[in-house]
Image (cartoon, rainbow, N blue to C red; front, side):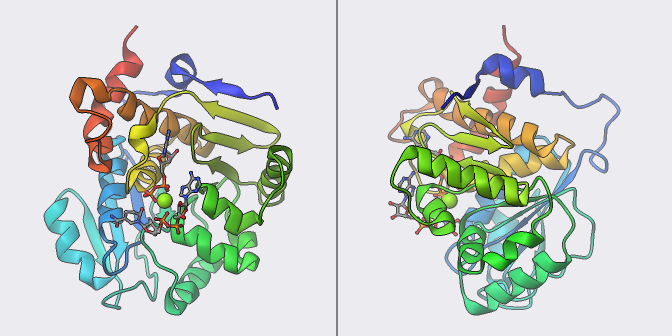
Length: 282
Ligand SMILES: NC(=O)C1=CN([C@@H]2O[C@H](COP(=O)(O)OP(=O)(O)OC[C@H]3O[C@@H](n4cnc5c(N)ncnc54)[C@H](O)[C@@H]3O)[C@@H](O)[C@H]2O)[C@@H](O)CC1
Ligand SMILES: Nc1ncnc2c1ncn2[C@@H]1O[C@H](COP(=O)(O)OP(=O)(O)O)[C@@H](O)[C@H]1O
Ligand SMILES: [Mg+2]
């Protein structure tokens, strides 16, 4: 298997600083759909990471129980509440986002499965699909055909197995990933160590990141970063490559800030600023 490495030079060539004349209204509006009782934190993490990736506005669509949590822990975010208290039951969006993430902390209840199906049937925006949205799609593969072209799907190994079934060898896994990527025109992010990105017949291998990322919510933060980058105008593949690299960098910069043991997903958003600065340094 020959892969293309995503290193500093590769990421720097993708990076586009915002124009001096931009404003929040044109810098991109990201929407994060997710959360359920007890897992609102995943949406907080994704929302912070999205805004800190440089988009202009962020809205979280969450069950009612999460409204105070989100508004207090992250006042920069706007919130739209589902009519249901504990889970998402009807995804009703009254604006046109530039990018949408769906799945973090969503849960897999029946009512949410139906809400996801109705949402996918009418949605036309680029999507970043993570966590329980992957799990729900894995249970109902008919939904794959509703995913817009160039949507990004970000499974860890277990989610990938739920989506594709098991494999006996690395070669078999790659064939299965490339098949689903080709059939539904998806950008597939196989998260792990290292993280691989599959698109058309190419495989990109991320070179940043380390075991500090083996901590709750680090994938939720990656979803936010990729979504924030797409919202501000990066093409989905470029956003995924840059997002995965920046996400890993936050952990590689750990020694300047904390230790691998004490690194948590909140640090990903906190260190994202340093990751962007490192990218610009010679
Ligand atoms: N603070 C929060 O609100 C958090 C919410 N979360 C949400 O919790 C829900 C469940 O997600 P989880 O991923 O925890 O549960 P899953 O059941 O999907 O995955 C956990 C299982 O996958 C295995 N696994 C994970 N990464 C692996 C890898 N790289 N290689 C091999 N096996 C691997 C684990 O050993 C475990 O058996 C999601 O909706 C997620 O977004 C989590 O992200 C944790 C933090
Ligand atoms: N040992 C490791 N080395 C590098 N990256 C890792 C390691 N462990 C986890 N990660 C990264 O952390 C993230 C974990 O995502 P995920 O399992 O979805 O977490 P969560 O669902 O808790 O947010 C992925 O981006 C993965 O690549
Ligand atoms: Mg996850």
